View 1 (spheres, rainbow, N blue to C red):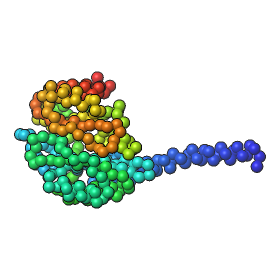
View 2: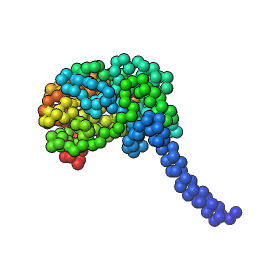
View 3: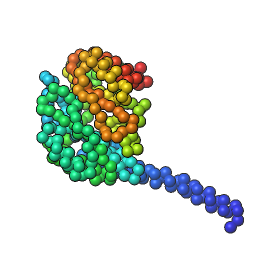
View 4: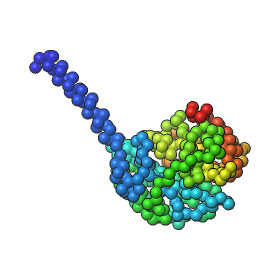
Amino acid sequence: MKADTQVRVLLIGLLLFIGVAPLVHAGLADLDRDGIARAMGKTGIASGDIYKVSFTRSDLQVKAGKVIIQPEFALTSWAAFKKSGESSMTYGDLVLLENELNPVISKLEEKGIGVSAIHNHLIYETPRIIYVHFLGYGNEVVLAEGLKAALAVTGTPLKSEAASSEMKSEVAKQIEKILGYEGNMVSGVLHLNVPRNDIHVKTADKEIPGGMGMNTPLNFQMEGHKAAINGDFLLLADEVNPVIKALRDNGIEIAALHNHMLDEEPRVFFVHFWGYGDSVSLAKALRAALDKAGIKKSKGTQ
């Protein structure tokens, strides 16, 4: 074979490799979203390479003090799925009554899905609500089947319809302007997700992106000019107490401080909060806490 012919063969082989390799990689990155939806009995929402399925506990009648908690405010179980190498991972948390807790734990363990945290997100609530965080690896459809089996031992409505977005009130728009982030209004609840793009969380050397719970959700259950607020701040260790102090200085109560995972790097903490009162005042208080964590407003809202 002549030298120029050998060069042509090598170039063709290289071009074929370059053309095929991205397709192979893309195939590995694709989740079986239809399989997950069939296994869980509900279609989820795709965002980038994450697929998330949620179930609101509309079967529960929960009060926190005198506030009747809307399911979309603080009573939603969810599971997010992401391709991780040749397998997949799932992470999320389940909203449970006390008598559902241990049956769910047993079912998760039986299905090979690990429990990473058990704790509260609310205070003053009746009945008591417990949140179980989980983390699992393997085939995404098998993981979804395991989570469906765990949900099946609870009173969670498994066929709930996805809620649609609503028009925002002027008060809701004012809250967004104060906080510096736009949100989504569903069933009278304003949801804002504040990203922590400066923190890249990994567990078992696999990244947990913001869309899988590594962000700061701020929720307002609107009642005219008043609101109940709940959510949690994703924080590094040295940010925890400055944020807690800012919240308390502004009259917001601390509901919990804990971890959601077992071996994440860097170590991150979640400060859950509760408050009720004038919506604008509460938004300013949360903005003061965001400032203590060095979280700036998004460029589009400054």
